[in-house]
Image (cartoon, rainbow, N blue to C red):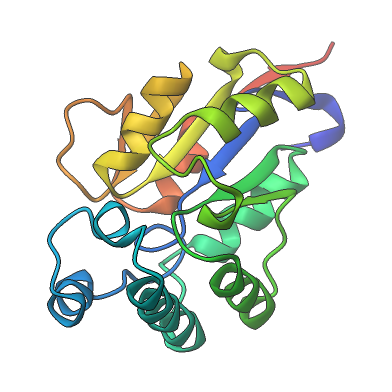
Length: 190
């Protein structure tokens, strides 16, 4: 496809979850066991600095050893070639995202972590970025592997895609990240 003769009409901005979407999922059962909490982990330990530090260590260690999910690099690079704005939105700490991006040479236009407050499923940062870029909500998409990702998208009024999960609320169900490329819509220039 000749990119010079084509422009993307959807999505113009894609928000990617990190764990379970771009990289292998962290073992949350182990995390919950060590921290002695149930789900959702973050909400259950938010006001406990010691447990938050333990969670951060889990995230950093995981970022240093996790593999990319199938097609993650190819999809992120293809969206970049198409001029689609790419953002990571995660409930993880910023250090873990920096490690993953550095290890795999991934480039994103924006990175949103829990360190910025208003973490998923809050739509705050999603709406903020959409407005900053001047996009319409219907031109944006969030891709994840958890109900929080779908809920964040629904709360923000944008389309949602879920990878490998049976989630009836999502607008798109993807077998893997490569399926994301099949929902990109183009407008051929005359």
